[in-house]
Image 1 (tube, rainbow, N blue to C red):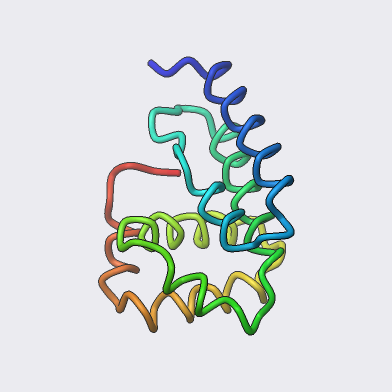
Image 2 (cartoon, rainbow, N blue to C red):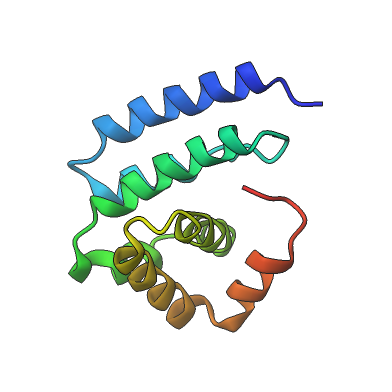
Length: 123
């Protein structure tokens, strides 16, 4: 069983880091993707983590999305796709998230979607 308090504290610390990096969006996205709460059993914890990632994604200009995606490793691209789907669940910033989805699909292919949807580790 995961220590939800520790996970939430780590997410809060990650959010502070991401907020401080918003002037450097590629670094903010990488920081937001660090240490996902895979062991969490709480939807609240997972939503908080997704909120941090969506905040970082929102700081990236539309014209820069492809270059940010290019700078991510394959594992980070798969993780980002999981967060894109998690963010789409809320219905907020869906236009922005669909742009990220398109860029990820173009770069990483359909396999990225399949891995995001089928992997057992959830974000």
